[in-house]
Image (tube, rainbow, N blue to C red):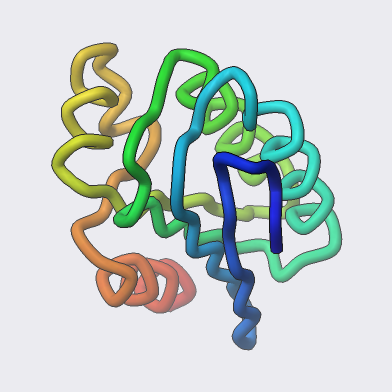
Length: 121
């Protein structure tokens, strides 16, 4: 899935969750398309979303704004969740604005999947 020149991704769907693996830049240039594409998939389901940002090179304030918007949208859709798999660069940016808890940062995709399984028990 080519979102923009600077942001690319793939989507995998499992039973009750979908994973987006993204590479490149989450910036003002890519934010609009990224938000629109992921929002459409949130509405189609499955309701649990994992954004794998471990290969993202850069996130600016527009990218952070898009993530906050997507978390809110996921939470509105029938107990949906959105978790973000981070890397040190993304984590540092998120911590600067104190959004690490709200954005549910996870160290790995496996940890995020485990959280989904635990939430359903």
